[in-house]
Structure formats: structure tokens, C-alpha cells
Length: 306
Image (spheres, rainbow, N blue to C red):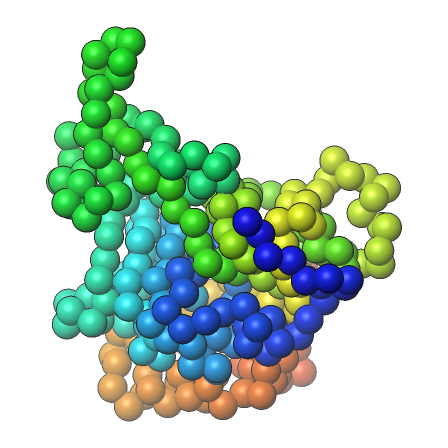
């Protein structure tokens, strides 16, 4: 059952997180790798210190590492956790090695199937993903998956348990005050994850006037019935990219990976200066990119090949 706010769903990031993200929540994470990650919302969760979280998604990347670095994550359920060519998630890896974070590995398809099951009101869905793997053994032991038999062919099949996040956080291109959301390009697991969730916060590059999206209803990716709150935040995925809006900030990502890998005082200082101390995501953007020169360049870069 989706929990909805009455009237306009437009909130600030501070209001949305304070209202909808509770300690110990299961948090569905939108975005993939370095594309359209919900950075503004994750920064706000970290600023408010909402802890004991279980973070779930397909590729949990930079947003997860920041939450782990702030000591806010108890468990992850994911297809992978990395920044691909930029390396592993160093804070997350260290926390896992210390035993501070419990990890339940899946394939990407298995995670997407769990969201799809919940989105369709089903207790589980079958898949052939995981067959023959140690991942299936671990998930069976934890009660998430079960090896079964196709009742028609007799072939082995895996049943994966539905996954219902308490709250999902997603960044999008546009939204309206009623919570209708437009995402351009790849959506991966996000639509089913949002449909499966009890509540959803969507940050958007822009919030358009009521009725604007009605002119092209086929362009709405997520209907407002599934969205609890919307937050307007230009560059809300920075330093990751938003298709047709701006490219990813490679230098910023590489710098984060450098300090995260080194750990120690420099990494702690980076987290303080960029996540805990800014009054909001706009303040972080001004610190990371004074005068917006880098953001302007990323916007031009994206426009050059879209």
C-alpha cells in the first residue's frame, strides 16, 4: 500500500527525508553506476544521520559508499557494488571485511525479479538466474531464494522472494506537483522498485507546472500514484550523469575514489566537508564547483553527443 501526501507532493529534501526515511528502513536505491544516482537525497539522509539502513538495488555505487562511510548502513542486498572502471566501493568493502555490514549477494536479474514480484502483488517469482551458483546457496540459507521444480517440464527453477522497500529514492529528469515523473533513457530496475515500495521520494532536475505532462501522458515513466514526494534539485545526480542533461564529473569521481581508498583522516575530512557540513545539496554543489564552471562544461559535453 503506497502512502501518499495530500495535495501537492513538492517538498524540500530536508522535509522529505525527515518525513519518510526512518532509522532501520529498507531503502531502494535508484540509478546505476555513474548514471542518474540520487545523490541529493542520499546526501540529505547522511546529513540527518538516519542509520541502521538496509540498502537494496542492482548496482549500488557512489550513494551506498557515502552512506556506509557515514556509518548508516547495516545490510545491503544487491547485484553488485562498484564504480566499474573507477574501482570498487572502498568504504563498503572495508565495512564488509570488518563485519560491520551484512551482504546478501544477488545477480542483477534476481534483484530486478524480486522488485517485479512485489510490484505485481506476488509473494515470489520464478527465475533461472542463480542456478548452479554459490549465490543461490547463500540466498537459500537466508530465506530469500528457494530451488524448486517447473511443474510442467520438471526442470529446476529458482523462486525468489518479493522485496518491498520501505522507501525508494530516485533521481529523474522532470516531475510535476502531483508526482508524475519523467525519466529519459535507461530506467533499469527503478520502475518496478518504485511500484513495489511503500513510499518513494523522487528528486528531479525540474518540477514543471501541473498539467504540463498531461499533454504527453505516454512520456510519463512513473505515475504520481506511486510517488509520495518530489524534490526539485538541479544537478541532483552530480557527480553522476543525467541523460541529455549533463555528463558525469570524472575528476570528482576519481578524487572521491582516491580519498576513499586511502581512508584515514583525509577521507573523513572529505565526508565532513562535502556531506555533513553543507547546509544542503546546493551548498555542496557550490563548494564542489564554485561558479558552476564544471557543471556548465558537463552540460555542454552531454549536448555535444545527444
